[in-house]
Image 1: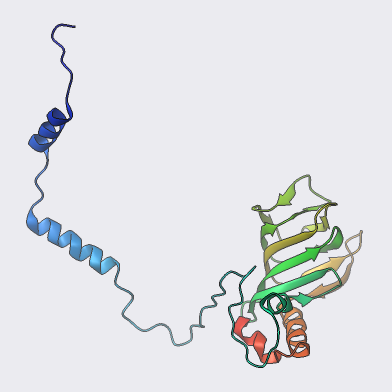
Image 2: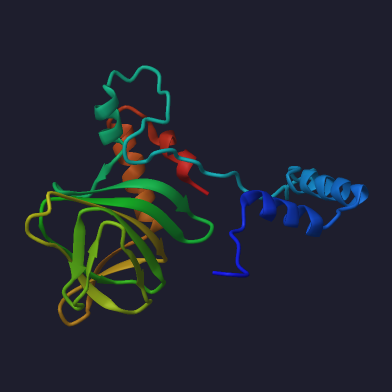
Length: 218
């Protein structure tokens, strides 16, 4: 069509050059100094009362500790870190916060079936890493990748469906877990301290020693 012509890459580049904003040298220098400052680690002292971090790499498949005088293969050692509660249920501790009254652990259930009916006085956060599970009181199914918030006070019954060989979920539990009968009467309880004692006994029994658990205690 008359009056129209194609625009080349050179035309665009030339136009951009004509309209490009000029950034003063001191502004560029100030920006680089700002970036440098942003990436500078904190130079002051941390609070003296602050506890140390807990860092556990690859909690599902990695052996992050070097333990002397323990003759176990890598897979045997990794499996030994799980604390058995029943023949099919075990947990792997990540944090026992005795000062805050909560614990964070991986819960593992091998095989399908009923786990427990319970309630929590405090909030619970869960992230399903493997398999799936559900509560009889709800329609949803928590599959791998799901996040679950359990409100304080709710009574629910955890079931691993048929066909699930292994379920692993990361749970952050504040306060106690209260086992209940169908009418809500409390029949048992566990908390950060009972879980801690179970872990101590287990690690002592397999030769790692009670103190092995201290790396998880805050």
